[in-house]
Length: 354
Image 1: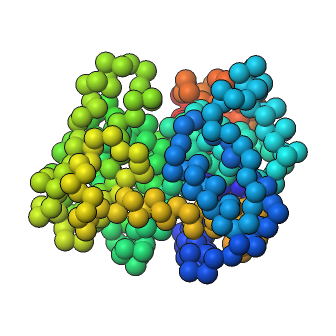
Image 2: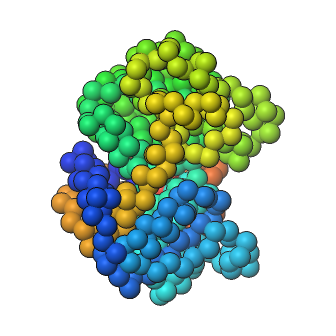
């Protein structure tokens, strides 16, 4: 099975994945996928995600091949992502891919004959990061229900925020706060989904006024590489900076601070040794979670997965998605459109089509 989007999994399935991760953390299994070959295709820079997936593969018996930059591949010669995928299918048993285009993982999942794990596709989704975030939260609070979560920073382009908010919305979350300047506020698509589920949320610009309510403070960096206008990045790059002075004694006693990393300057290092800072533990949790994902994808671990009802899918003669970073703008796709509640959405990146 593929791990492309958190939309594919319901509450029970998520909890089951986290349980498999906990079992592997407590009882390592070096023979789980012995002699399998994993292809790690990283078309975008990565430290934690690439290395923790590699570590996960080694710890459960797999061999790893792949690349960490498209500059060393035939993409420089004009090879399509479709052809790269078909080629890798002949060399490996599973694809773990990070790509700079929104919807690339969905596209590769459709054309691949072997399982695909999305390690981040543009500003779209990052399911493995989401699962390790959930794993960390659950280990700290013992539950994923009844919590108040504040997302801070780059919420427009932050794929980790998109995936985590979708996943947490499957639980009995108390409230979401989206803390961002107008230019980087959460997308309408995410808010529409929360409205459909009746989940309470609030858009705010100052995290300080809500600290006493928050259980999970999810910080994100302002992502320079996502900005089309350098001037806008310079304007916003220092919009939120938290430190021991701004957090300790002003938040709930058991509030935790998470961050998908890397950080730039949005979290002062003086917070690192406080009880609230869990971001390095969070990163470490990525290994057992990714072990579980790989094992499930290769049918070596059980997951009682239920096929989801499919929305109507139609095809267009040409790409209609308005997202300039959508994979449909860069690859020859089937130009699929998903019909949901009478509205049209790009099948690949999920952007609403007007």
